[in-house]
Amino acid sequence: MTSQFTVAKFGGTSVANFEAMHRCAQIIHDDNQVRIVVVSASAGVTNHLVTLTQQKADLAERKSLVKAVLDIQDAILEKLTLDADLATDFSQTISEFEQLAELPALSAQQCDEMLSFGERLSSFLFTQVLRNLGVAADRFDVRQVLKTDNQFGKATPDVNATANAAEQHLMPQLADKVLVTQGFIGSDTYGQTTTLGRGGSDYSAALLAEAIGAQSVQIWTDVVGIFSTDPRLCKKASPIARLSFDEAAEMATFGAKVLHPATILPASRSGIAVFVGSSREPQAGGTWIEKETESKAGIRAVTQRKNQILLTLKSPEMLLASGFLARIFTILSKYNISVDLVTTSEISVAITLDNALSSSRPELDQACLEELSEFCHVTVETNLTLVALIGSEIQLRQHEVNFMNVLKDFNIRLICHGASKHNLCFLVEQGESDEVVQSIHAQLLEAC
Ligand code: ASP
Ligand code: MG
Image (cartoon, rainbow, N blue to C red):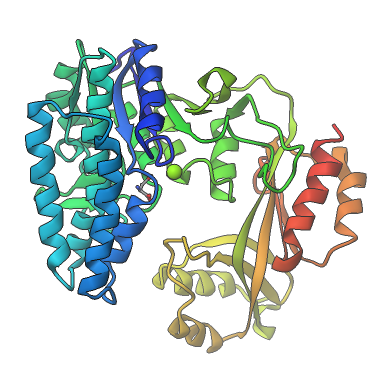
């Protein structure tokens, strides 16, 4: 199934208040190809909802969190009157929210129900803002089509079920109107609300684009595309006009904060171009992520991911022994621990694990360490940052002198290159990593 339509997603800051919503609505008004709009919760709302789901919030605190969420909606409603059809469902949704917030302890399923209110509420308001601009728009409950398993908090989408549901419920409505729907949320086979994990609205947009066979998906955020590094860190960071799916996936995985890493999966699987731009400055252009890029080989960006753990596993038995690595990886997989970088020597293996607070991965388990210690000597180091150079056909030879110049000033704990031509990664001490990134950017990205 293919269509010439486009899906547009607006993040939390883009729908933070009436003025921001109005700017986004203007983008939709001016682009006749967009038929599905995916909205995030208004900025700040999901954080309040997360606190509401935490056991330690007492009644008074819960009340003030509910008020904080409703204040954000009310500030928008001061400038907007909802049409009768939207108004009825909106107040019904608010009552459901208030009722659920009365419960002191929520099950995992109820937590996802609670987290869903941010997107459910913002989508009513955005629909009205679009209608006020003369766009034929309706609100659509994404839980009808975005089908997932029941891993609450980080559900996995069911791509086939989503495509079937979209064909039945979504496609017939797209010819003559724009549907405003929710990012981040979905439903399991029983219709219970699920969420895709924090920042998951980008992923929702790409999944819906895939389900309707869209040409492209636009991710509207607060920056004019993906930069060569974090512009807050390097003043000379510059937006990248085009990236391949592989490069973008590496960047999102290794710490560029602009896109949820899973977004590239459906896009590259189904060949859907992804545009990233700023809803404040739509005329400023942005980054296009596509299958092929004409850009030359080389390093395009440098990213960093803090809070990494380095595990060094040493065994005298590795000398001429086989099965050592298999044994280690079997144990890590048993504990559901995902490994990022690996280097080996004759008698030892070093691996890195992501321990970022935002990470969905479990922290390194004590039981896992004990099991590993039964056959090797284990050292755990923390406070490390993974720095990644990202690009295509990266060949160290081209950058050798500058690269070595940067590295000589810092304590490099581990380097990985070769498995992929799209990255070169190394670990540095966390306290030095900003400086490492600035120095890499100056020597390797600004110089060429
Ligand atoms: N509202 C959700 C969050 O803040 C999802 C998103 O905005 O992408 O994580
Ligand atoms: Mg986001």
